[in-house]
Length: 99
Ligand SMILES: [Zn+2]
Image 1 (tube, rainbow, N blue to C red):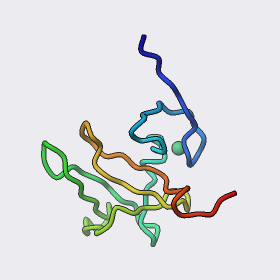
Image 2: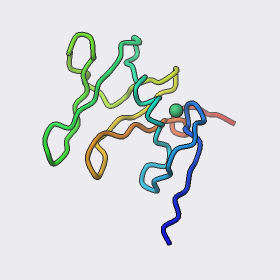
Image 3: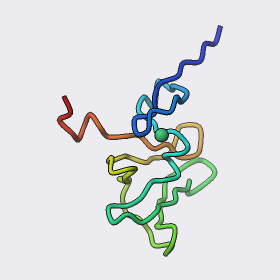
Image 4: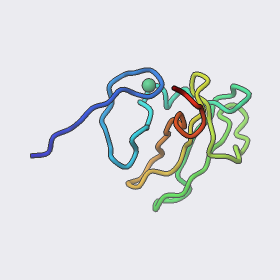
């Protein structure tokens, strides 16, 4: 049995598939909203077929020298995913003394 579990996206509460490795990954919709601290939209890429991580400012193609991004004001961390592609996780626990 391969039961699929779902959990609410840490940003918008949409139910998304749960991956043990990425317990706080955001949903696709939020992924598309990732911006830098100035609110400029970011795009993420793998730098090669085997992975790697690169982020650019979508509009200017300027290199974004950080893994940190913001979605709806929530600080997030973007990185290459183990099986290719990019995953963005909310940094809620690490960053905010929330309750
Ligand atoms: Zn979401």
